[in-house]
Image (cartoon, rainbow, N blue to C red; front, top):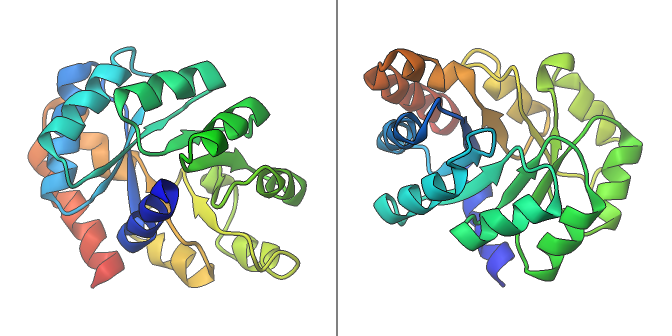
Length: 208
């Protein structure tokens, strides 16, 4: 199954970088720097109006990357992202219509959840991995506590993930980590070398 293969690649990679960018060029160059730094999971945020074109371009340049769409707010945007080639869909909150769409077309859907009830609802709609968002509002112990009544839940914290705390999240039971500004911050100043260096540091920290 398509989604099984993508999930396998995602769980192996462990790090998904959230890429926004002021424009298409910045987003693509940021993706290039992250890929060069060893990160293979690239989440292109739909806060960028050029997101569909960015997804197409990044997939063309880096066919071995797993390229997804982030900040997807509805099923229509999810469909647009998948048509552009997105291999997974991430949203800041759970949306039933998006879950149905992704389940129908065997696309991994990772919705933002903050409570056990939200996580259970997502799982009841076929979600395999939930996004704990914003991660900065929690500590890694939150995952440990959630997995006591819900040992089957797979969680990807996103927001506030840093080089210093990323392994704390994995030690607590996270299966993936969504990283944004701590890797991509230099892109706004055109310092893509810094982006690559930070990506390399994250890969080394997580994979050794």
